[in-house]
Image (cartoon, rainbow, N blue to C red):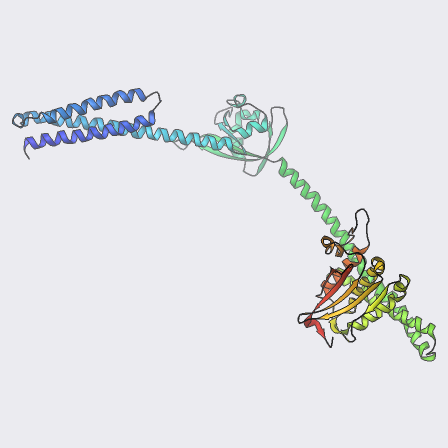
Length: 465
Protein backbone atom coordinates (compact mmCIF):
# COMPACT_ATOMS: atom_id res chain seq x y z
CA UNK A 1 0.00 0.00 0.00
CA UNK A 2 1.46 3.37 -1.01
CA UNK A 3 1.99 6.32 1.31
CA UNK A 4 -0.63 8.33 -0.60
CA UNK A 5 -3.27 5.66 -0.15
CA UNK A 6 -2.60 5.35 3.59
CA UNK A 7 -2.83 9.10 4.09
CA UNK A 8 -6.07 9.26 2.12
CA UNK A 9 -7.60 6.42 4.20
CA UNK A 10 -6.62 8.20 7.42
CA UNK A 11 -8.40 11.36 6.23
CA UNK A 12 -11.55 9.54 5.07
CA UNK A 13 -11.84 7.49 8.27
CA UNK A 14 -11.23 10.62 10.35
CA UNK A 15 -13.98 12.50 8.50
CA UNK A 16 -16.39 9.56 9.07
CA UNK A 17 -15.55 9.42 12.79
CA UNK A 18 -16.07 13.16 13.17
CA UNK A 19 -19.37 12.90 11.29
CA UNK A 20 -20.54 10.19 13.69
CA UNK A 21 -19.41 12.31 16.64
CA UNK A 22 -21.42 15.25 15.26
CA UNK A 23 -24.52 13.05 14.94
CA UNK A 24 -24.16 11.71 18.53
CA UNK A 25 -23.62 15.23 19.86
CA UNK A 26 -26.72 16.47 18.06
CA UNK A 27 -28.84 13.66 19.58
CA UNK A 28 -27.38 14.36 22.97
CA UNK A 29 -28.31 18.05 22.72
CA UNK A 30 -31.92 16.97 22.13
CA UNK A 31 -31.86 15.15 25.47
CA UNK A 32 -30.09 18.02 27.29
CA UNK A 33 -32.28 20.73 25.78
CA UNK A 34 -32.99 23.31 28.44
CA UNK A 35 -30.56 21.65 30.89
CA UNK A 36 -27.61 23.24 32.62
CA UNK A 37 -25.07 21.25 30.54
CA UNK A 38 -26.57 22.12 27.16
CA UNK A 39 -24.21 25.08 26.60
CA UNK A 40 -21.04 22.99 27.16
CA UNK A 41 -22.09 20.42 24.62
CA UNK A 42 -22.99 23.13 22.12
CA UNK A 43 -19.40 24.46 22.37
CA UNK A 44 -18.06 20.94 21.92
CA UNK A 45 -20.22 20.50 18.84
CA UNK A 46 -18.87 23.75 17.38
CA UNK A 47 -15.29 22.52 17.92
CA UNK A 48 -16.12 19.20 16.27
CA UNK A 49 -17.58 21.08 13.28
CA UNK A 50 -14.40 23.18 13.02
CA UNK A 51 -12.26 20.04 13.30
CA UNK A 52 -14.37 18.33 10.61
CA UNK A 53 -14.06 21.30 8.25
CA UNK A 54 -10.28 21.35 8.77
CA UNK A 55 -10.14 17.67 7.90
CA UNK A 56 -12.15 18.29 4.75
CA UNK A 57 -9.94 21.19 3.66
CA UNK A 58 -6.79 19.07 4.13
CA UNK A 59 -8.46 16.30 2.13
CA UNK A 60 -9.24 18.68 -0.73
CA UNK A 61 -5.77 20.29 -0.84
CA UNK A 62 -3.72 17.15 -0.46
CA UNK A 63 -0.76 17.07 -2.90
CA UNK A 64 0.23 13.53 -3.77
CA UNK A 65 3.76 14.62 -4.59
CA UNK A 66 4.40 16.08 -1.15
CA UNK A 67 3.32 12.99 0.84
CA UNK A 68 6.13 10.73 1.97
CA UNK A 69 6.84 8.54 4.95
CA UNK A 70 8.03 11.51 7.03
CA UNK A 71 4.70 13.39 6.99
CA UNK A 72 2.45 10.23 7.05
CA UNK A 73 2.76 10.44 10.82
CA UNK A 74 0.80 13.72 10.69
CA UNK A 75 -2.20 12.01 9.05
CA UNK A 76 -2.11 9.16 11.56
CA UNK A 77 -2.18 11.67 14.45
CA UNK A 78 -5.20 13.36 12.83
CA UNK A 79 -6.94 9.98 12.63
CA UNK A 80 -6.19 9.23 16.30
CA UNK A 81 -7.55 12.67 17.23
CA UNK A 82 -10.79 11.95 15.34
CA UNK A 83 -11.02 8.58 17.08
CA UNK A 84 -10.52 10.23 20.47
CA UNK A 85 -13.27 12.79 19.77
CA UNK A 86 -15.66 10.06 18.65
CA UNK A 87 -14.96 7.91 21.74
CA UNK A 88 -15.45 10.88 24.10
CA UNK A 89 -18.74 11.82 22.46
CA UNK A 90 -20.00 8.21 22.33
CA UNK A 91 -19.19 7.49 26.00
CA UNK A 92 -20.62 10.84 27.05
CA UNK A 93 -23.83 10.06 25.15
CA UNK A 94 -24.13 6.65 26.81
CA UNK A 95 -23.40 7.96 30.29
CA UNK A 96 -25.90 10.81 30.06
CA UNK A 97 -28.54 8.52 28.52
CA UNK A 98 -28.09 6.04 31.38
CA UNK A 99 -28.34 8.84 33.92
CA UNK A 100 -31.48 10.10 32.22
CA UNK A 101 -33.04 6.63 32.28
CA UNK A 102 -32.07 6.30 35.94
CA UNK A 103 -33.73 9.63 36.68
CA UNK A 104 -36.90 8.56 34.85
CA UNK A 105 -36.92 5.20 36.70
CA UNK A 106 -36.45 6.96 40.02
CA UNK A 107 -39.37 9.25 39.26
CA UNK A 108 -41.46 6.25 38.25
CA UNK A 109 -40.65 4.39 41.49
CA UNK A 110 -41.42 7.50 43.53
CA UNK A 111 -44.78 7.83 41.78
CA UNK A 112 -45.56 4.18 42.52
CA UNK A 113 -44.56 4.56 46.17
CA UNK A 114 -46.66 7.66 46.69
CA UNK A 115 -49.69 6.14 44.97
CA UNK A 116 -49.63 3.00 47.16
CA UNK A 117 -52.70 2.40 49.31
CA UNK A 118 -50.54 0.78 52.01
CA UNK A 119 -48.19 2.79 54.19
CA UNK A 120 -44.49 2.68 53.33
CA UNK A 121 -41.58 3.94 55.46
CA UNK A 122 -37.88 3.69 54.55
CA UNK A 123 -35.63 3.66 57.62
CA UNK A 124 -31.85 4.25 57.69
CA UNK A 125 -29.63 1.78 59.48
CA UNK A 126 -28.18 4.02 62.17
CA UNK A 127 -28.39 4.12 65.98
CA UNK A 128 -31.64 6.11 65.86
CA UNK A 129 -33.21 4.33 62.86
CA UNK A 130 -34.18 7.63 61.31
CA UNK A 131 -36.89 7.91 58.67
CA UNK A 132 -35.59 8.48 55.15
CA UNK A 133 -38.77 8.26 53.06
CA UNK A 134 -42.52 8.08 53.68
CA UNK A 135 -45.32 7.80 51.15
CA UNK A 136 -48.55 9.78 50.98
CA UNK A 137 -50.65 6.97 52.48
CA UNK A 138 -48.51 7.13 55.65
CA UNK A 139 -48.95 10.88 55.92
CA UNK A 140 -52.72 10.64 55.36
CA UNK A 141 -53.12 7.88 57.94
CA UNK A 142 -50.99 9.42 60.68
CA UNK A 143 -51.81 13.09 60.12
CA UNK A 144 -48.21 14.28 59.66
CA UNK A 145 -46.61 16.52 57.05
CA UNK A 146 -43.66 14.93 55.26
CA UNK A 147 -41.07 17.27 56.81
CA UNK A 148 -42.34 16.40 60.29
CA UNK A 149 -41.21 12.78 59.81
CA UNK A 150 -38.10 12.89 57.60
CA UNK A 151 -34.95 12.49 59.69
CA UNK A 152 -36.93 11.59 62.84
CA UNK A 153 -36.49 8.29 64.75
CA UNK A 154 -38.92 5.61 63.60
CA UNK A 155 -40.24 5.14 67.14
CA UNK A 156 -42.13 8.41 66.70
CA UNK A 157 -44.52 6.18 64.71
CA UNK A 158 -44.00 2.66 66.03
CA UNK A 159 -44.97 1.24 69.38
CA UNK A 160 -42.82 2.38 72.30
CA UNK A 161 -41.49 -1.21 72.62
CA UNK A 162 -38.90 -0.32 69.99
CA UNK A 163 -35.73 0.78 71.76
CA UNK A 164 -33.77 3.59 70.06
CA UNK A 165 -30.41 1.85 70.34
CA UNK A 166 -31.74 -1.50 69.17
CA UNK A 167 -34.08 -0.47 66.35
CA UNK A 168 -32.36 -2.50 63.62
CA UNK A 169 -32.43 -5.74 65.62
CA UNK A 170 -36.05 -5.26 66.56
CA UNK A 171 -37.09 -4.48 63.01
CA UNK A 172 -35.48 -7.57 61.52
CA UNK A 173 -37.12 -9.74 64.18
CA UNK A 174 -40.59 -8.81 62.91
CA UNK A 175 -42.36 -11.14 60.49
CA UNK A 176 -44.80 -10.22 57.75
CA UNK A 177 -47.91 -11.42 59.59
CA UNK A 178 -47.29 -9.64 62.91
CA UNK A 179 -49.62 -6.96 64.16
CA UNK A 180 -48.08 -3.74 65.49
CA UNK A 181 -49.42 -0.34 66.49
CA UNK A 182 -48.75 2.91 64.65
CA UNK A 183 -49.09 6.16 66.58
CA UNK A 184 -50.74 9.11 64.88
CA UNK A 185 -49.79 12.72 65.40
CA UNK A 186 -52.71 12.95 67.86
CA UNK A 187 -51.33 9.92 69.80
CA UNK A 188 -54.06 7.57 68.58
CA UNK A 189 -52.95 3.93 68.21
CA UNK A 190 -53.82 2.21 64.94
CA UNK A 191 -53.44 -1.59 64.55
CA UNK A 192 -51.44 -2.46 61.43
CA UNK A 193 -50.53 -5.66 59.59
CA UNK A 194 -46.81 -5.26 59.22
CA UNK A 195 -43.97 -6.48 56.99
CA UNK A 196 -40.27 -5.53 56.84
CA UNK A 197 -37.63 -6.03 54.14
CA UNK A 198 -33.97 -5.03 54.01
CA UNK A 199 -32.40 -2.45 51.69
CA UNK A 200 -28.85 -3.31 50.53
CA UNK A 201 -26.09 -1.13 49.07
CA UNK A 202 -23.99 -2.03 46.00
CA UNK A 203 -21.73 -4.21 48.14
CA UNK A 204 -24.64 -6.21 49.55
CA UNK A 205 -24.52 -4.61 53.00
CA UNK A 206 -27.74 -3.69 54.78
CA UNK A 207 -28.23 0.08 54.73
CA UNK A 208 -31.82 0.32 55.84
CA UNK A 209 -35.29 -1.20 56.00
CA UNK A 210 -38.56 -0.83 54.15
CA UNK A 211 -41.58 -0.95 56.44
CA UNK A 212 -44.94 -1.68 54.76
CA UNK A 213 -48.14 -1.57 56.81
CA UNK A 214 -51.83 -2.17 56.10
CA UNK A 215 -54.54 -0.54 58.21
CA UNK A 216 -55.92 -3.45 60.24
CA UNK A 217 -58.96 -1.73 61.74
CA UNK A 218 -61.49 -2.74 59.09
CA UNK A 219 -60.12 -6.28 59.06
CA UNK A 220 -60.47 -6.49 62.85
CA UNK A 221 -63.98 -5.08 62.68
CA UNK A 222 -64.87 -7.67 60.02
CA UNK A 223 -63.36 -10.46 62.14
CA UNK A 224 -65.32 -9.34 65.18
CA UNK A 225 -68.50 -9.12 63.12
CA UNK A 226 -67.79 -12.59 61.75
CA UNK A 227 -67.29 -13.99 65.25
CA UNK A 228 -70.59 -12.45 66.37
CA UNK A 229 -72.27 -13.84 63.26
CA UNK A 230 -70.85 -17.30 63.94
CA UNK A 231 -72.13 -17.17 67.51
CA UNK A 232 -75.54 -15.99 66.31
CA UNK A 233 -75.85 -18.70 63.66
CA UNK A 234 -74.61 -21.32 66.09
CA UNK A 235 -77.43 -20.30 68.42
CA UNK A 236 -79.90 -20.37 65.52
CA UNK A 237 -78.65 -23.82 64.54
CA UNK A 238 -79.22 -25.03 68.09
CA UNK A 239 -82.70 -23.51 68.09
CA UNK A 240 -83.41 -25.09 64.70
CA UNK A 241 -82.25 -28.46 65.97
CA UNK A 242 -84.56 -28.05 68.96
CA UNK A 243 -87.39 -27.00 66.63
CA UNK A 244 -86.86 -30.07 64.46
CA UNK A 245 -86.91 -32.24 67.58
CA UNK A 246 -90.22 -30.66 68.59
CA UNK A 247 -91.59 -31.27 65.09
CA UNK A 248 -90.60 -34.91 65.30
CA UNK A 249 -92.26 -35.12 68.71
CA UNK A 250 -95.42 -33.50 67.31
CA UNK A 251 -95.47 -35.93 64.41
CA UNK A 252 -95.09 -38.83 66.81
CA UNK A 253 -98.02 -37.50 68.85
CA UNK A 254 -100.14 -37.14 65.68
CA UNK A 255 -99.14 -40.55 64.38
CA UNK A 256 -99.72 -42.49 67.60
CA UNK A 257 -101.24 -40.61 70.53
CA UNK A 258 -104.05 -38.97 68.47
CA UNK A 259 -104.41 -41.40 65.59
CA UNK A 260 -104.79 -44.48 67.79
CA UNK A 261 -107.91 -43.33 69.71
CA UNK A 262 -109.41 -42.03 66.46
CA UNK A 263 -108.88 -45.47 64.94
CA UNK A 264 -110.71 -46.98 67.94
CA UNK A 265 -113.65 -44.60 67.38
CA UNK A 266 -113.64 -45.50 63.71
CA UNK A 267 -113.68 -49.24 64.50
CA UNK A 268 -116.57 -48.89 66.94
CA UNK A 269 -118.46 -46.75 64.39
CA UNK A 270 -118.07 -49.46 61.76
CA UNK A 271 -119.45 -52.06 64.20
CA UNK A 272 -122.40 -49.82 65.05
CA UNK A 273 -122.98 -49.21 61.32
CA UNK A 274 -123.29 -52.96 60.74
CA UNK A 275 -125.80 -53.21 63.56
CA UNK A 276 -127.73 -50.09 62.57
CA UNK A 277 -127.27 -49.56 58.82
CA UNK A 278 -130.03 -46.93 58.59
CA UNK A 279 -128.83 -44.72 61.44
CA UNK A 280 -127.73 -41.36 59.95
CA UNK A 281 -126.02 -40.30 63.17
CA UNK A 282 -123.71 -43.29 62.99
CA UNK A 283 -123.05 -42.45 59.31
CA UNK A 284 -122.05 -38.94 60.31
CA UNK A 285 -119.73 -40.24 63.06
CA UNK A 286 -118.15 -42.79 60.70
CA UNK A 287 -117.62 -40.24 57.90
CA UNK A 288 -116.17 -37.72 60.35
CA UNK A 289 -113.72 -40.23 61.83
CA UNK A 290 -112.60 -41.30 58.35
CA UNK A 291 -112.09 -37.66 57.46
CA UNK A 292 -110.16 -37.07 60.68
CA UNK A 293 -107.86 -40.02 59.93
CA UNK A 294 -107.18 -38.55 56.47
CA UNK A 295 -106.48 -35.13 57.99
CA UNK A 296 -103.94 -36.71 60.37
CA UNK A 297 -102.33 -38.57 57.48
CA UNK A 298 -102.14 -35.36 55.46
CA UNK A 299 -100.61 -33.51 58.42
CA UNK A 300 -97.84 -36.11 58.54
CA UNK A 301 -97.24 -35.76 54.81
CA UNK A 302 -97.32 -31.96 54.98
CA UNK A 303 -94.58 -32.05 57.59
CA UNK A 304 -92.47 -34.08 55.15
CA UNK A 305 -93.22 -31.51 52.44
CA UNK A 306 -92.06 -28.70 54.72
CA UNK A 307 -88.79 -30.55 55.38
CA UNK A 308 -88.36 -31.41 51.67
CA UNK A 309 -88.55 -35.14 52.32
CA UNK A 310 -89.58 -37.69 49.69
CA UNK A 311 -93.33 -38.37 49.39
CA UNK A 312 -94.52 -41.75 48.18
CA UNK A 313 -96.89 -41.75 45.20
CA UNK A 314 -99.32 -44.38 44.01
CA UNK A 315 -101.96 -44.80 41.34
CA UNK A 316 -105.17 -43.23 42.64
CA UNK A 317 -108.48 -41.81 41.46
CA UNK A 318 -108.02 -38.06 41.83
CA UNK A 319 -111.58 -37.31 40.72
CA UNK A 320 -112.89 -39.30 43.72
CA UNK A 321 -110.69 -37.24 46.06
CA UNK A 322 -111.99 -34.06 44.44
CA UNK A 323 -115.59 -35.23 44.89
CA UNK A 324 -115.02 -35.84 48.59
CA UNK A 325 -113.54 -32.37 49.08
CA UNK A 326 -116.45 -30.77 47.18
CA UNK A 327 -118.91 -32.69 49.39
CA UNK A 328 -117.28 -31.25 52.50
CA UNK A 329 -117.45 -27.68 51.15
CA UNK A 330 -121.08 -27.82 49.97
CA UNK A 331 -122.47 -26.31 53.23
CA UNK A 332 -119.87 -23.55 53.10
CA UNK A 333 -120.65 -22.70 49.49
CA UNK A 334 -124.40 -22.85 50.17
CA UNK A 335 -124.06 -20.36 53.01
CA UNK A 336 -122.00 -18.09 50.73
CA UNK A 337 -124.65 -18.39 47.99
CA UNK A 338 -121.92 -19.75 45.66
CA UNK A 339 -122.65 -22.51 43.14
CA UNK A 340 -120.12 -25.28 42.40
CA UNK A 341 -120.16 -26.75 38.90
CA UNK A 342 -117.96 -29.85 38.72
CA UNK A 343 -117.17 -30.78 35.09
CA UNK A 344 -114.38 -33.25 35.95
CA UNK A 345 -115.20 -36.75 34.63
CA UNK A 346 -114.97 -39.78 36.88
CA UNK A 347 -111.99 -42.11 37.17
CA UNK A 348 -109.10 -39.74 36.57
CA UNK A 349 -106.33 -42.06 37.71
CA UNK A 350 -102.98 -40.40 38.44
CA UNK A 351 -99.78 -41.44 40.18
CA UNK A 352 -99.95 -39.07 43.14
CA UNK A 353 -100.43 -38.90 46.89
CA UNK A 354 -103.62 -38.28 48.89
CA UNK A 355 -102.08 -35.01 50.09
CA UNK A 356 -103.08 -33.57 46.70
CA UNK A 357 -106.54 -33.06 48.18
CA UNK A 358 -104.99 -30.28 50.28
CA UNK A 359 -104.49 -28.37 47.04
CA UNK A 360 -108.16 -28.89 46.15
CA UNK A 361 -109.16 -27.86 49.68
CA UNK A 362 -107.14 -24.65 49.52
CA UNK A 363 -108.52 -23.74 46.09
CA UNK A 364 -112.11 -24.29 47.25
CA UNK A 365 -111.49 -22.44 50.52
CA UNK A 366 -109.92 -19.59 48.58
CA UNK A 367 -112.98 -19.31 46.31
CA UNK A 368 -115.38 -19.41 49.29
CA UNK A 369 -113.53 -16.48 50.88
CA UNK A 370 -112.70 -14.21 47.94
CA UNK A 371 -114.87 -15.12 44.93
CA UNK A 372 -118.42 -15.09 46.33
CA UNK A 373 -119.39 -12.01 44.30
CA UNK A 374 -119.21 -14.11 41.13
CA UNK A 375 -121.76 -16.61 42.47
CA UNK A 376 -120.16 -19.54 40.61
CA UNK A 377 -117.08 -21.79 40.66
CA UNK A 378 -116.47 -24.09 37.68
CA UNK A 379 -114.09 -27.04 38.14
CA UNK A 380 -112.84 -28.66 34.94
CA UNK A 381 -110.12 -30.97 33.65
CA UNK A 382 -107.95 -30.70 30.51
CA UNK A 383 -105.78 -33.45 29.09
CA UNK A 384 -103.09 -32.74 26.47
CA UNK A 385 -100.19 -34.74 25.06
CA UNK A 386 -97.85 -33.54 27.81
CA UNK A 387 -99.96 -32.88 30.89
CA UNK A 388 -103.25 -33.19 32.74
CA UNK A 389 -104.63 -30.02 34.28
CA UNK A 390 -107.35 -29.24 36.84
CA UNK A 391 -108.92 -25.75 36.65
CA UNK A 392 -110.84 -23.90 39.37
CA UNK A 393 -112.43 -20.92 37.61
CA UNK A 394 -114.20 -18.28 39.71
CA UNK A 395 -115.90 -15.02 38.66
CA UNK A 396 -114.61 -12.81 41.46
CA UNK A 397 -112.21 -9.89 41.28
CA UNK A 398 -109.33 -10.55 38.87
CA UNK A 399 -105.87 -10.63 40.46
CA UNK A 400 -103.45 -8.13 38.88
CA UNK A 401 -100.85 -9.61 36.54
CA UNK A 402 -97.89 -8.49 38.65
CA UNK A 403 -99.37 -10.28 41.70
CA UNK A 404 -100.23 -13.67 40.19
CA UNK A 405 -96.95 -15.28 41.19
CA UNK A 406 -96.79 -13.39 44.48
CA UNK A 407 -100.07 -14.87 45.77
CA UNK A 408 -98.24 -18.18 46.19
CA UNK A 409 -95.86 -16.56 48.67
CA UNK A 410 -96.55 -16.24 52.37
CA UNK A 411 -98.48 -13.20 53.70
CA UNK A 412 -98.80 -11.40 50.38
CA UNK A 413 -100.69 -8.09 50.30
CA UNK A 414 -103.19 -8.05 47.44
CA UNK A 415 -104.59 -4.63 48.22
CA UNK A 416 -102.81 -1.51 49.46
CA UNK A 417 -103.03 -1.26 53.21
CA UNK A 418 -105.04 -4.46 53.55
CA UNK A 419 -103.40 -7.79 54.33
CA UNK A 420 -105.25 -10.70 52.75
CA UNK A 421 -105.17 -14.35 53.72
CA UNK A 422 -104.43 -16.00 50.35
CA UNK A 423 -100.67 -16.14 50.88
CA UNK A 424 -100.23 -18.77 53.59
CA UNK A 425 -102.67 -21.34 52.15
CA UNK A 426 -101.42 -20.93 48.59
CA UNK A 427 -97.83 -21.10 49.79
CA UNK A 428 -98.66 -24.57 51.16
CA UNK A 429 -100.23 -25.41 47.78
CA UNK A 430 -96.97 -24.50 46.03
CA UNK A 431 -94.90 -26.66 48.40
CA UNK A 432 -97.18 -29.66 47.89
CA UNK A 433 -97.18 -29.26 44.10
CA UNK A 434 -93.39 -29.15 43.96
CA UNK A 435 -93.15 -32.32 46.07
CA UNK A 436 -95.52 -34.05 43.60
CA UNK A 437 -93.57 -32.80 40.55
CA UNK A 438 -96.62 -30.72 39.63
CA UNK A 439 -97.07 -27.05 38.79
CA UNK A 440 -99.61 -24.57 40.17
CA UNK A 441 -100.55 -21.06 39.15
CA UNK A 442 -103.33 -18.58 38.45
CA UNK A 443 -104.58 -17.03 35.22
CA UNK A 444 -107.28 -14.42 34.54
CA UNK A 445 -110.81 -15.65 33.85
CA UNK A 446 -113.06 -13.86 31.36
CA UNK A 447 -114.81 -11.52 31.65
CA UNK A 448 -113.66 -11.41 35.28
CA UNK A 449 -112.28 -13.65 37.96
CA UNK A 450 -109.37 -16.07 38.20
CA UNK A 451 -108.50 -19.61 37.18
CA UNK A 452 -106.39 -21.42 39.76
CA UNK A 453 -104.89 -24.60 38.32
CA UNK A 454 -102.65 -27.58 39.01
CA UNK A 455 -100.77 -29.33 36.19
CA UNK A 456 -99.45 -32.90 36.45
CA UNK A 457 -96.99 -34.35 33.91
CA UNK A 458 -98.68 -36.55 31.31
CA UNK A 459 -96.46 -39.51 32.15
CA UNK A 460 -97.85 -39.39 35.70
CA UNK A 461 -101.42 -39.76 34.48
CA UNK A 462 -103.25 -43.10 34.03
CA UNK A 463 -106.78 -44.07 33.02
CA UNK A 464 -109.45 -42.37 30.98
CA UNK A 465 -110.05 -38.66 30.98
